[in-house]
Image (cartoon, rainbow over all chains, first blue to last red; front, top):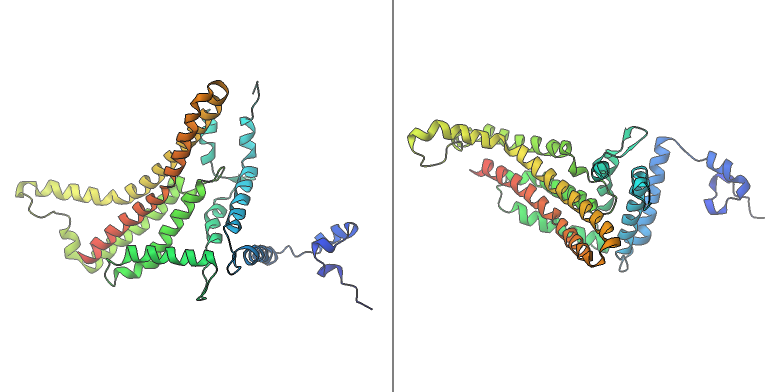
Length: 89
Length: 226
């Protein structure tokens, strides 16, 4: 009989909705944990889109830049709110 | 209008904590050095660019001057990437802040001057007086040369800041104009063409990097090779 995978080791897409909160609380939020998460995310993107031999196109870089633009937009939304098209500001 | 124009140069803060460090460190995520012989495409392109810059900059130096290679390469890569990333919409360019540019210019310039004074004292001091000046002019000329020496770091920093800031401001202004003019006179969409051309010219921000590093090179070379 296949063993039940403990909740701690499941990936996010395999966690059921009811267990989501406990899964989030079980993650490692120490500084080294956060750095490790950034590192894993970075290498995941790098190895999937840029480090492919013979097929690493510019799309990998453009995805990063698009995320950068969106990130900056959300950060400056408070000042940009005043620039909407309205009849009376 | 007043607030909007300069709002993009404000330092990004979250809950009062300045986040400039993140924006300065972001270009490091785009460079991936590797030790393989056959790299992926982007690593090969980066390697080729770095070799191009290295050969262009360092061949005119003596052995002692070439110990600065890493520093100068890092400088040119850093400034280039920061300026190019600032061209993206809504991005924050750290090199528009005078504090950063002064922080880069003053230590580097002072290092070249101190190096020249320590290893080649006589030649460095002799540089303060150009050859063949008439004798009555000598005191005034020494003062002028000293002033021009001390103004070098300030000129380096302010040149970079002013150029990048002016470019960004122009882009904002022209973009605002375009938006307003689109609803009144559609034929002035010529303005959009001008904005686009200015964007391309703004990528001569890269050229400004060359200016920065080359000026630094000149002073280093002058002090190290006489």
